[in-house]
Length: 368
Image (cartoon, rainbow, N blue to C red; front, side, top):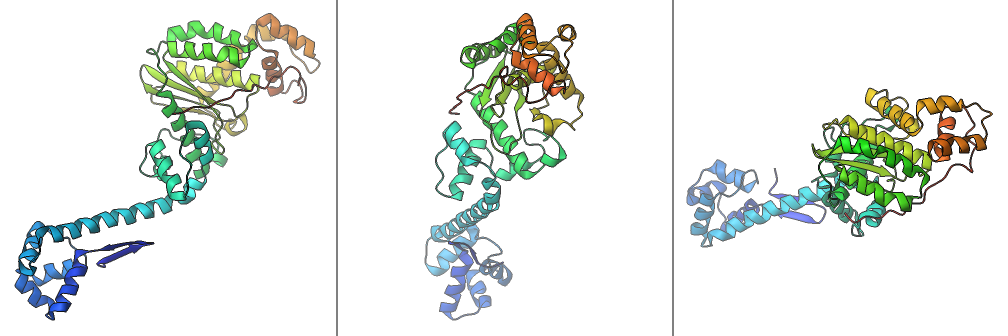
């Protein structure tokens, strides 16, 4: 171990560095200096080589022998220790730099008001502070927020860091949302009203939707999509009385929005408090065979379009746009939801019913 530690433009001088200079100026051996100081040659050697630190006792002996204050030596040790911390912090930031580059920093500037980063150091420091971690790599650990669950092709650092960044952002924003204690019975009572909102515009249904969720103990957070997160929505319990339901605007087709919402509502009703549910795209989740996910999918499908009503429609590839519109009107939902269901099941072509499907435009901006 050296008595000088350097990293980039940071230099840390161990007190032993100065003692070695003093011994040289005195033109005596280390053994003689140790004798005069009242310590062992081994102790002095370790001190000079930066292998041990100056204790209060050694600081006292040096001060008497050399005519200095005790504080001089203790301050040298303290300065050295602080410089070592600076060096380690600089190394930590450099080790996080590549990971930080995988995160769209502008997203956090626009959505939650993070300061513009002038350097990669600023970027890492600002992100760590916002995510409340000492190192961005902590967010890759298996026990951070959630065991990441998706298809193998998406199980990489870029997806993991961004999915957890998105969820943590939702958690941070949710702290500003007041909710009553969670009430499953009340949520079930509100389901028909939530379903009836499918025929309304976002500017009409979103305020009421937030009220309903807050009344049931759910902090509803709608966020813009974060690139490379692969996440459409998430459900995370904060306490037994409070749950966060987060969705993004990755694909704001009306049918996908409502299917995703009711999918997440089912996860809330499943009340698996120790589980964080992450909903990804259909393509990414098609190989993820999980009973809870299947149950949530079935709930969303059947609540939006009850099975008995769907049987009455008896859809075929010849089902017309007018048939879909009339059926949707009869059961009280957006026709795009019916069209989306038929497309998803391969009954009609994907390029059909473009006039029936609606793409929501929702301006989202939060300050966490």
